[in-house]
Length: 65
Image (cartoon, rainbow, N blue to C red; front, side, top):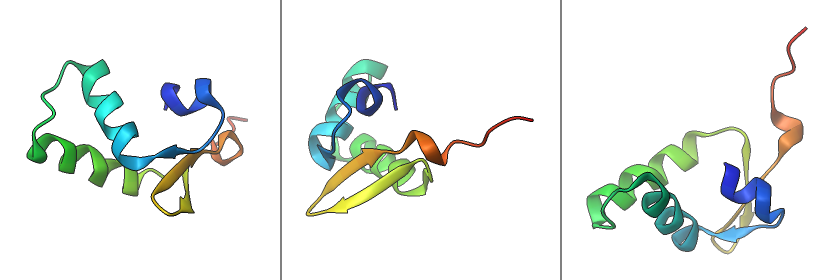
């Protein structure tokens, strides 16, 4: 989520998953990109903005007591 936190604006999903794969040193084959996309969908810190854009919402982080 560093990518979205630094950018501080919504990012198109395909650009986001390609950037994540690149930073992780992974291939950009369909299987890898699908896996990353699935994990994005399951991450509750991310907010879907519509039209394929995702945004990182720091306020959704669990605060420790």
